Each structure stands twice: as C-alpha cells, then as structure tokens.
Image (tube, rainbow, N blue to C red; front, side, top):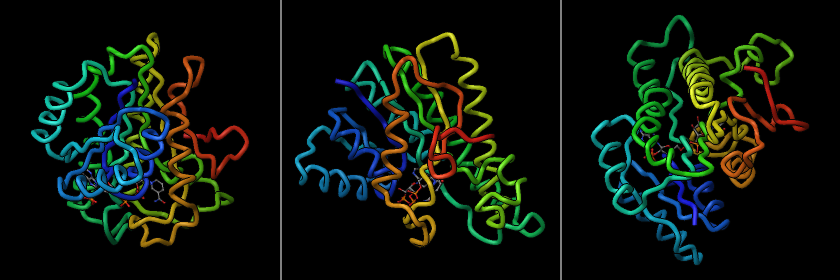
Length: 245
Ligand code: NAP
C-alpha cells in the first residue's frame, strides 16, 4: 500500500484529492490545521466506506505543528510516497501592487511558500524511502509570469500582487527542488487545479472540485517516465497540460 499526505485537506480541493487517492487504494493522511474539521472530514469519507484515511493536525505556518505531524506519521509508516502541498490562502484585499500591505505579503507567503518549504523539508526523509516518490505543489496558472504578461491570457485582468507573486515564488521553489532531485526517482511538479468553485473564491470558480482533484491526482500518480520540474494547467492547455512559467 502507498502512503500519501495532503495538506489543507479538511475541505474543497484538498478534501477531494484525499478522497480520490483513497478511492485508488492509497492510505491517506488528511492534513488539517483545525483538528475538529479534520475529524469531521475523515468521518465523511469513512461514511462512504473509505477507511484508509486518517486525520493529522497540520498547520503549515507552524513549525511545531509540522514537526509534530512528521513525528506522528513517522510512528505509523516508514515511507511516504506522495506529498500534496495543497494548503493555500488568497491573502485578502487589496491585492494591488501599490496598496497591498507587507503584512498581507508575509501572511500569504507564510502559507503558500514557506508552508510548502516547511512541510517538504520535514517529510523529505520519509519520501526518500519511497521507490516512486511524488510531490505535487498545488499552484495556479495565476502564478505564471509569462501568461500574466500576455494580454490574450483569459485571466490577464485578474491581477493580484500578493497571491500571484506567492504562486510564482512557489513555482520557482518547485523548479529548484526538482533540479536538486533530478537524478532520483522523484517526480515533482507544480499543478494548477483550474478556476474551481470553492470557498477560496466565494464559489465564483467555474470548475468542479471533482475535476480539480483529478488534475492534481494525475501528477501524484505519474509514472517513473513522467515529467518532473514542470508546470501544468489543463484549463489553460487542454492538449498537453503544460504551461509556461
Ligand atoms: P479553500 O477552499 O480556501 O481551502 C483551502 C484549504 O487550505 C482549507 O482546508 C484551509 O483550512 C487550508 N489552509 C489554509 N491555511 C492553512 C494552513 N496555514 N495550514 C494548513 N491548512 C491551511 O481553497 P481551495 O480552492 O481548495 O484551494 C486549494 C489550493 O488550490 C490552494 O493552494 C489554492 O491556491 C489552489 N488553487 C485554487 C484555485 C481555485 O479556483 N479554487 C485555483 C488555482 C489554485 P481551513 O479550512 O482551516 O481554513
């Protein structure tokens, strides 16, 4: 059996990813910063017959919480095969380059960038023990500097200095991480789930969580001949999925 950890998974896209991985027979640790919400989420999955799911308290902005989660999971499994860095925040308003505050940047980067660094570094030893380790950093096409410089990009006018730049930073972290692990069996990619109807955007998204989940899970289960160090958004490139950084 393979073991997976999904951060920010008590609801929305993260929850759906846990569900789809569990349906495919993985044993999944459902990371939730709020333990009660995580327990409720696991109960929902168990009610559907998915017993291969377990809650783990994990706030990606809190070093102690991350290290405690690593310790707890380490008591139960010697190997982690899949890490999905899904937890993310938008960062509030305003998001203009001239008016967003340093505190907004710090809080958003703490989750979207440093959170991914914390969790990845804490779990890398367990991932190293897998024969097919996979990391999916849940990014956004909104973090593509190339697309956001192209007036024909469908979200060209959806600018947001805080959120967009946090995903661009996450993208570069993904590139560097994949580079450092290029001579291993790791496959590490940045994946955009698409503009999805969740609390994240007040349910204004146009896609379903089911489709978003599939897009993420695809790269969690990619074969050893699959890509690494790439950026995918099926919404923006339905053919190959790959999009420019
Ligand atoms: P969501 O509905 O707001 O859910 C976000 C999840 O992340 C929640 O479970 C939240 O926990 C958790 N979270 C936030 N801060 C956390 C922290 N410090 N530690 C641990 N968990 C934390 O968002 P979503 O739409 O599912 O988005 C998931 C990911 O997809 C994000 O990375 C987002 O940037 C990305 N994305 C979303 C869209 C979209 O259209 N929805 C598009 C592109 C990319 P609480 O429930 O405790 O708040």
